[in-house]
Length: 141
Image (tube, rainbow, N blue to C red; front, side, top):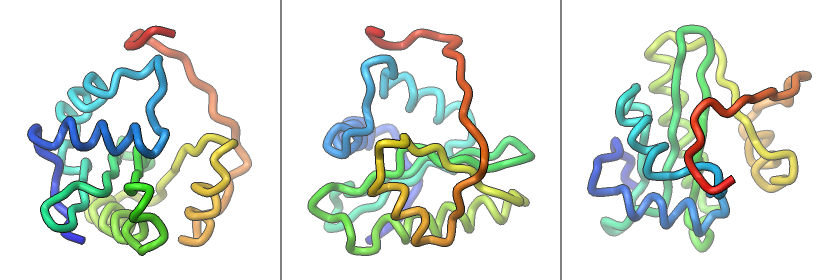
C-alpha cells in the first residue's frame, strides 16, 4: 500500500470509504469535515492506495499537548491485511516528529472490532470519559 497526503481529488473516494466503513453520522457533514481538516494540519490527513485506488484513510491532529486520530478506515474487503496498522505507524511517525508525547483515540464504545484493533497496537484504555458539545451544526440532527 502506498501512503500519501490527502488531496482535494480524493474527496469523493474518501467519503465513499467512510460510508462503506460505517463511519458517517447524519450530524457530521463529511465534506465540511474535510474542508476543516484541510485548513488545519492537512499534512496529517493521509490516504492509502493499492493499484491507484484509495482503500484506506486516517485523519490526525496535534494541539501541542496531545495527538488525536479520526476516521481511520480500511475498505471492508481489505481489512485484516495490515493496512490499518501501516497507516497508524505512518501517523505515529508524523506526530512523533512534531513532538507529540501521547496519542488519544476516540472510538465508539459499540465498535468492539476497532477497540480490539487499537489494543493489538499496544494502545491502552484510559480511565476517562469523553464529553462533547456541538458548536456548529452540520447535518440533519
